[in-house]
Length: 218
Ligand SMILES: [Zn+2]
Image 1: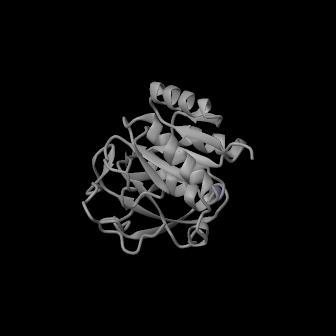
Image 2: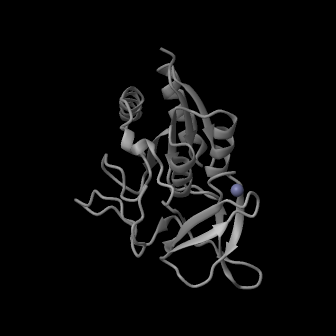
Image 3: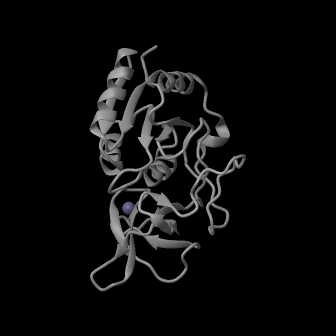
C-alpha cells in the first residue's frame, strides 16, 4: 500500500523543515506551504491524503484554511497544530480530525499521522453541510473606513474583500465576485490578532461552538 501524501502548512520555516524531515523518514511523501493561501495552491496542484496545519499563520490562518478544506475537500484528513492550545483534543470550533500540540515530540505527531491515515473515516463526517458557514476574523478597515473581511470562495477558492454591514456574530451571505457562488460566512471578532475572541480551550467542553454565532457546525 503506498504511503499517504502529506501537506504541512506552517509559517515557521524551521517547523516545516523538522516535521517534513521526520515524516519523510517514515516514508511519507511530504509537501510544505507557508500559509493558508500557499496550502490551497498546493491542494489545487494535487490533493493530499492528510493536511497538517498550524492554526496561526499570516494572510490566511489555519482556522480559515481548515474550514475551507473541510467544505471543499472533505476527503482530506486534517491535523490542526498549535502552541496556543494544550492537550490532545481538537480545540472547539476547529474543523480538524486530530490535534497536535506544537513543541511536543515529533514522534507523537507521527503516531497521530499513522493512526489517522489508517483508520476509516466515519461517514457522518464525510458529508459537508451545505449550510455550514465559513467563519473568518474581521481584518480591519478599507480606504473608505468601512470594516471588511477577506472571504475565500469555497467553490473556486479565490479570495475577495467583502465590506461588512451590521450583524457581527450572525450568519451572512455574499456571492463570490468571481464565480457568483453563494457563500455563507460568520464574523469572529478578535482581541488578539492571532486568536478569535473567547476562543480559548475550556476544560471539559468538547463540542464545537462559536461565541455569538448560532448553530455553527462543521
Ligand atoms: Zn468563487
